[in-house]
Image (cartoon, rainbow, N blue to C red; front, top):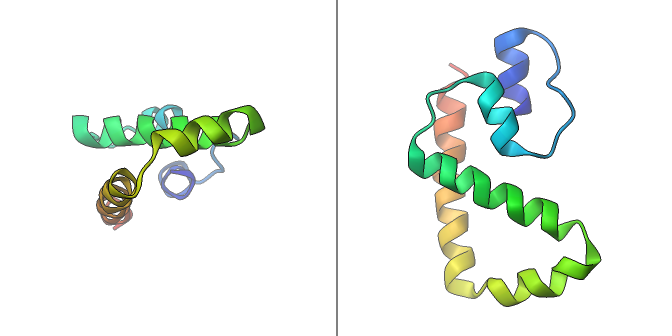
Length: 85
């Protein structure tokens, strides 16, 4: 989101790891499914930064779920890249 913000506003985005917040700033017309994924990714990132949550996160994710998240994230990334054109 940082690079989309930079392209749209010609300045750096506010420092934040909250993808939901950054997405709201760039107003891309994000679909509900992409918004849900962005919120999920934000949760994993923020919680993963704290040692107490790492074991909890490991228990929440199995190979099937992580593969699904990765596939959806790759699709989201392609869509975001298309917005740079």
